[in-house]
Image (cartoon, rainbow over all chains, first blue to last red; front, side, top):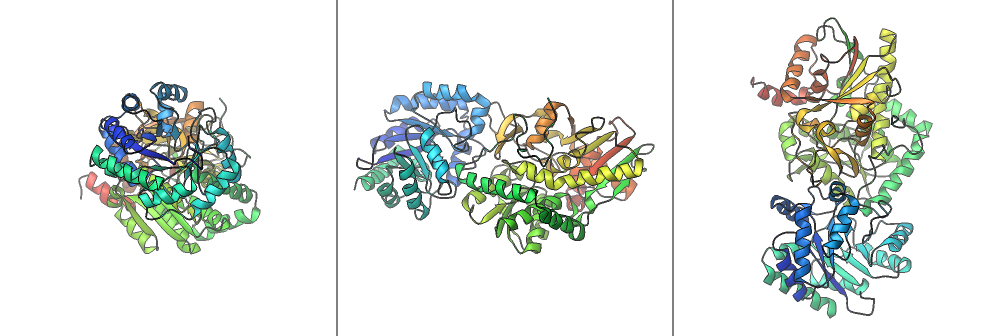
Length: 237
Length: 384
């Protein structure tokens, strides 16, 4: 875990699938400190077009929850950084909330994220909580009290995806979150370029890059390695 | 199990194990704001006076009850004529109420989803009436099937956003409307069209549609001096059905029958799942992935259903039956030929279960008119 004065954490989102272990290894070799592994859902409300298309392709390729858990185990063998599956309530509902939580941990994950379970719903499910620029102080405080290791700051009101700038509301969110939560803050949604990673990283303790990583990963592990290295360099500069 | 809490109670909105708020955290403050605004207007006589004035003087309420003796010889079958409401379907009841609520919350931009286009037209209509910016998300397949409604929405000044994702129908349109809302949450009101979505939407829509049931209950008592043996309505998301059922839920002798499209029968073939912000009966596979629904009627072509219907089903208070495309088309033609009323394909599903319903006195919600369906229905009947 990194604090404000240590190196920034770089988290890379990949979609579960046959290429995920190799891509995860490339991302870690390029400097990723954490891998988020998407378990695809057919109707992902929090996701923009890139993650949606990746989810559709993964489902078409047979990535059921069971297949995703197998994939998670393979990624666990391929890399030694923390792994955090990110998915939606529907998968837990079908598989069983407690059972999926247990199986995700058994497969080697260090925590999990559920994009459509807000902080006050299903409190018994230990997870990384998300807060957004719209979140009230009370909700940020509750998220801080219940989150699993770090807090996921959603940089903007919107879905995941590539954007040209970091939203101005983000600085205010970091400031509020710092007052209400002492642990690490990682910023995600809309971060795609080294410049954006650097400016978000200047405020937060880490950044999460998803959509652009998925786009680059289409060109193979070599391209992903190079891209992640460019993010790493920007964060360390 | 007891029937669900009637409307106008403090914490209505969660229906047994169904309902809830399964949405990204970004939306929670907007839902809290909506709850606060809703609780305020729910108790505000001036708000309800505005709602009543608009539903009467603008929309044309009360709608009549029509006895259809040539459609159902030898029985007393009444149609609640929501097809005669301004814009041609029950959807306007809800659009008026929510537009008033949006105005109360100070929102200037409205987003909505639409399947058959009836909710989109109703939303575009009230936005024109109130001077609100209106964006309607509609699946590309539904735009093809319901071209006249696309033209109407555009004439009314709405922007119609074509959704090319997935099934290109109501499910995807709803997801896109919610994503737009997430993105523009500070300025935008999401005017949902059915008793679906996260709390408090199912309760809000139910309350604005309850006028169908309250009116028809009074009308049938006036005409027949007794309650009907059965109330029948079609169910996609389920708002016209909840609207008419809600006034009869406590009348235990009245059968409540919901009719689903046979290949979009969430209540008959679905499983508990999470879709569009709430837990309900959903057509989903064993892993929770949402399956495609299929119906000739764009308004019923939806793999989910309002959480209260799932609860009414589990409690045994309502029954849900299927209707095939062919049966619906047969009713579409039969009501036109026998009564001079062209029903929406959605409402034709409700008509299809009249024959097999026990009882002499039957109330059917004719939720909309069928002009929008002519091209699709005639093509399907092989007459085009």
